[in-house]
Length: 536
Image 1: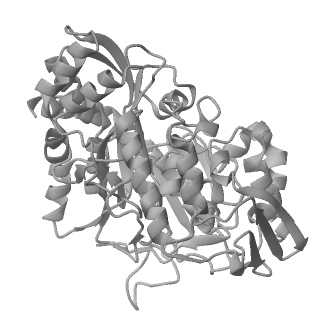
Image 2: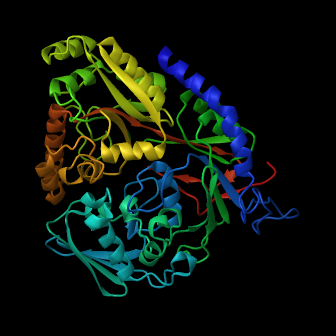
Image 3: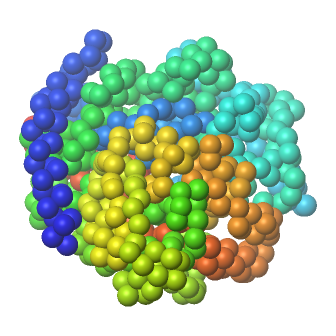
């Protein structure tokens, strides 16, 4: 525990002052054409009749890489994409219940092979791209599925045989086999965010920084390393948001984010991970702490091409060497639970009681290393995202590994480098930090043969449960499908292509001046009804 505390305090102390200096410029709207932070009062109030509201909500967050749904996978990007895009269907905020979005309704054929979506009329694209049509939706999904696009989400849509638009307001998907999770595959989440095909063509390689959707906000300005500014979409089918602007201010260090919130320079501290800091805000009446049991997981990815990680006994030894309680209770301060399998508790198909389960047992780890021919251990290295709790967690793992003879060098990397690590599998070890809403999204995007790196995010290039994944997708009986997922988890834990670590809780800290904030399960929030009261 001392190791994690030392890393946390040292890293944050060094970065906080530097990060705050950059924040002051960013939060004041230092880019051309951006409105000043905390602008004039909106029509929601006046000096004589009631409270006044700012025309901007400011969110402290860490910059991602791209806002192109074909490629982004960082939660940093997802938080913004949720505001810009819509999907055919969406998750009801805070739940996994699927409700209408761009499609007002949908039909499923008796054999489960045809899904017909009936689109809303009059939905407008942002930035003058005209009315949304069924053909736009078809082109979006065809782009995701096209091998030339090289989208890491293509494997999610493997069951789609074809998609067509018989008229301007009808989209029809023909499936190769029935799919129990098809609506989750086209929901407003990751690849299900529908991008304007003409804008994709117009902007080419730059589209990820010039996105066009049909959501409640549109991108106004992106100043790299400083902020992303969104402006309310007056044509949004659900009605224009109450606050005109949302400014995502780039503050990668949590200590700096804390100072910015306390100084009133931001209104929302997004994705807080330091348990002591979170507790301090919980005891302060000037702030609201929003906490949800998310489906976010952390997994230690192991590259079998890097010896000796090709030996299952070595991988098992590594799993037994990890002190999971030191991570869940120490690093995460109770904001996480141990992940016994690849499917977290609370998600359909979870089976935390399966065997083998790898609990902390350093003596067992040493025995397995001796059996594998490494009585003195070995040297290896890991690329770790230099954000949130990941560096502190890996300090604990590094110490645990050292106790059994494994010398692991840690390379702290930025978000783009980490993402590249997952797709290229160019190091022995990495960490997978991901949030998904159902098991097929985890399995088909990270542990499914067709998306073996570099084609996708299957870092260990694992193919051991491909047949079971396909069977589970096609099985419409809940009990039989749950049994298949149980088989998948048993096989996964036997082969151990990656080590499940923890499942997280998700926390945002919000100023009491903010009203109407609604937090979701997947590091997202509904900002359409948010107002920020001034003068409190």
